[in-house]
Length: 229
Image (cartoon, rainbow, N blue to C red; front, side):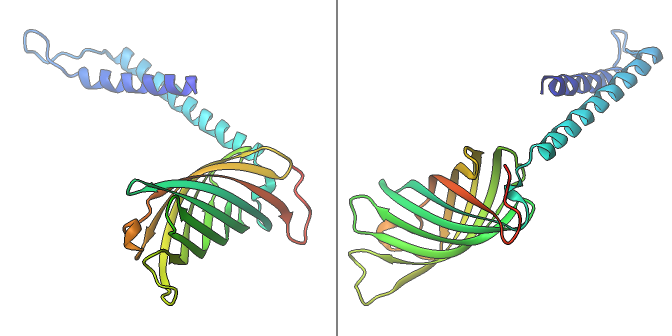
C-alpha cells in the first residue's frame, strides 16, 4: 500500500510539472521550464510508476484468488441468524433475522429470510417473510458483501384491530463485513436500510436503518464434497 501511494504521488507531481512547463518567465516571454532530457526522464519515471501500480493491483488480485474460501463456490448452502437494533421517532426497536441461502455463482447467493421487529416499551411488532440476494466481491477470511431483499409482512399494534390484517411490502438494502472464525462458522456485522410502502402511523412511514450482528453456518456443497476450509 505504501508503494502504491508513493507511485500515485509521483504521477501527480509529474502532471503538475508538465502543466507548469509552458508558463511565462518574468520578462513575459514563453520559456520551457523543463528541457527535453528532463521530459524524457519524466516519461520514464511515469512509465515505471504506472507499471508498479499495475503490479500492485495484480498482486492484490492474486492474493484474493489464492486465499479465497471455497464457502462461496456454487452449490454451497448456508444458514444464519442476526440480531439488529434501530431507532425511529425517538423509539428503539429490536429485530431478529433468520436466513438460508444457496450460492448460484462464485460469491453470489440467494435465499429466503424471516424477520421479526418489536418496539421497546410498545406493543407494536411486525413479522415479514421474503427473498434476498447477496454478493461477496472479496471472499477471503474477511469478506465484504452487499445485499438486497424483497419482503411481505404484517404488523400488529394497539390501534390495529384483531380483525384487520395490516399488511405491507418492503425492500431492504444491506452492506456488511463477515469474518471467518471457525471451521464452518462466520461472524458478520452489517447495516441495513428498509423502505416500506406503508406502516402503522405510530412508527411513521419507515423504521429507518438498523445495525445487525450475526453468524452464518456453511454446510458445504449439496450432494458434493464438503468444504475443507
